[in-house]
Length: 340
Picture 1: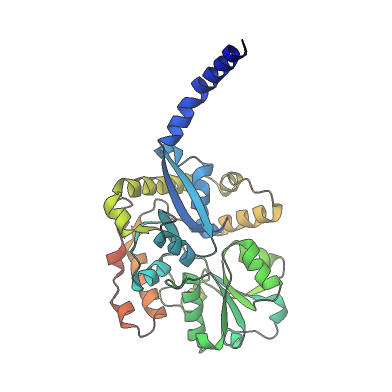
Picture 2 (picture 1 turned 135 degrees about the horizontal axis):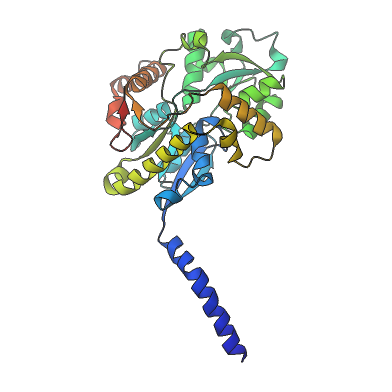
């Protein structure tokens, strides 16, 4: 009797769950390495699973969250992820060092970087040149790729007559915990940081801004300031051997960007299930402050790519290989498309 009852229970479980197990087993899995979590420049990637953009394409996207774009790209090169989302100047740095990386879609339409200094130094650091001899945090680089944050920090320093060798650069990560802890502990005097973390620290009177890429006056002083920041990248071999996977991932990203473009900041933040009220409030404020932050459809902008190449060459000094690297050689716009 027991065996018969147990067998009936087992059969019932199988009839209910087997289709789900089989469906899960047949679902394509895509791993994406990305800085975060909840760094505003990479927010579309956080939203993919929340709004079901991957399920709509019959795919399961898993995130591998790391401390910087260069680290995300390194995970891609190590085959721990299928795609990476990182600043495109960082991808160019990787290609310059022999990395097999190709950009397949745009994520951002506006680079958000703010050079913030801890409040205790307000009377001592009045201009960029005053950072000479101090500690500056940048997004975490790798041996094979220099993050966009580090490239920008070095360019801003050079423009003020400060050699990168005259400051100590340390890894600042790309999350609220990492960047805020570094400044509040005094481990760094300044950070070339991200939103919404910078504005949150400013509102709490913990930092002041020394340079802001979203300020037109500051941006005019930076060559190529309109560069493409976050982009979706993959390996060239994936592009060649698994084009269907690239097509799927680009479709998922475009679906997410289009959803964001048609929903309010409140609706976007609501999907993220943020429990910390301060984090929720600062993210919402930043989304309202930068309404044109994201690409509406993932298309590459030809003008923005020109800016990116200009920025990368300026940050690379006299390196002839960097001067010779053409950005168009590492762009595959077959699925995302192109705009002017």
